[in-house]
Image 1 (cartoon, helix red, strand yellow):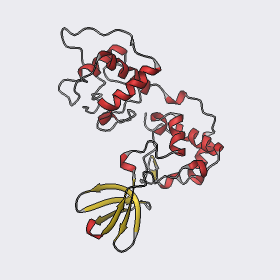
Image 2 (cartoon, helix red, strand yellow):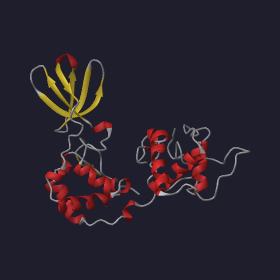
Image 3 (tube, helix red, strand yellow):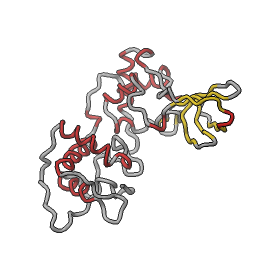
Image 4 (cartoon, helix red, strand yellow):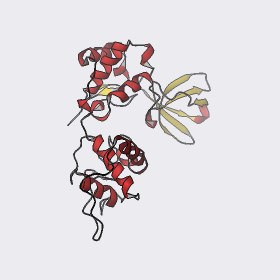
Length: 258
């Protein structure tokens, strides 16, 4: 699935094969409930390349709502159904109603999240981010910050207010695999916490909580603990509700390159 700006995997299909039935001009499965089902189907068929939220990866970012071969309902249906001949994007093997539900989900990915209304103050939230939360020690915005947590440069374009708030209150709820915590206990009694970067039968490499790259031979390790899914604290006990609102408002303004 997927290749750069062919809008891979599911989204820039060419015309349907000869003899194929022309899809409806309007998606017949376009309710919020249909989109929720489409989300599940997207996770199965498309997230490997496009990310769980359409943020991109091996395939293009789908959250901007811009598709090279068109974003109408029938165009997206054709793309998901037929794939792109000559590319890594294969046809999706699903029933028509399932394809339509994926169309419903994808179109919602491309709707501006910034239209949501937030009760918080973005300027105050930036102060919380910089001075109260310690966020910049682990997260990067543009070229500033650490690398222990996910980059936040375009987080406001990719994530809604509800997701941002949950990430602060329950950081373990939807933590990317690449940022799950590990804790190493060496044979000499040293304990090092961080996120795993690579591991094989002989060694393990991680980025520790000081943002340092570390490598350990397993012969020198007494134990590797994987019981800490998130190195990020739950901010509900560290910040006031107002500070949480303001921080969410600030994060929602981070749009990255458009």
